[in-house]
Image (cartoon, rainbow, N blue to C red):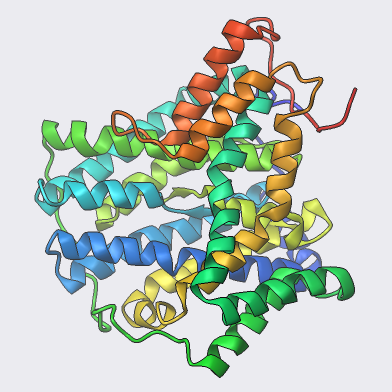
Length: 422
């Protein structure tokens, strides 16, 4: 498969076709994968945003507005992209971006940060409408992209192992249920079995957390943006790079690994629009999500690839609902133990990681050295000049491969390796 050269916005089956086939595509597996992705995105990442808001001395209303922006528009992105392309292109927001903003709010007043959020969306939109991202992705060798995906997502697998030591009975029961279900209960999604058994174990052991989120049900309070050059350099530019170089790159690689013809330009354009709209409400960016696209596009969302977009629809509805009722739901969702959430998300990534490793290190691909460099940079999760590891993994891996392997003539699109000898 190749990323083919098409128009500015790649054509898809259309929203009508997405609605028409949705009922036939929805099943227990798509529903459970969408639920797991939503729980993952509405728990730990929400806590990062809440912590950033507290560090910036935001009011409860401003915090709720921030959550409404990123979850509401993130869910809307899922619904639009999944229905139009009939692919599990899942929207959310940049989790590393939230961490970046957390540090910036100690320096910049929130109105300047909001202005920078909007400017970041404009940058991403420009990258999409110019078609630059599509051109870059056509140049990148797919083994290197797959190695970046493996390195970026391996933390979820490692997190599942660490979660066992953090909460042995609960997480151990969930892990055992996952593999037993995979072996003996073909009609039940293993990830759903893990989640249900884990929740039962939580109830039996009394491992639910306490309500410490500090947010009651309040109306959102919107902040008028102001624009400064310092905030543009410190927040807007790094945030835009994170969205494109981390979230969109991961999502694109995951979709390609699952043999989807990823609409790269459209994914970038919608991430730019999502960034602008979320910024207007006081949120840092709504965009295509890497990890949740991985969960919704994996075989845990069903054997039929063409039907897995239903998992993204489920995720989108739950995400948007979470944004609308954030003031009431955040304290409840954060009562779930973090190790269980991390373990279930890690289990859902297993087959995605296996396919990424196979595609990255196919012995006949000619990109093994570059792929290995991309893998270890992504695994190291380094941040240089405010830019996160996935961007550097792609850049350095491609440069190293060009220097020492030089397998692909300039301008030739990079094919996706299947992991099988030719």
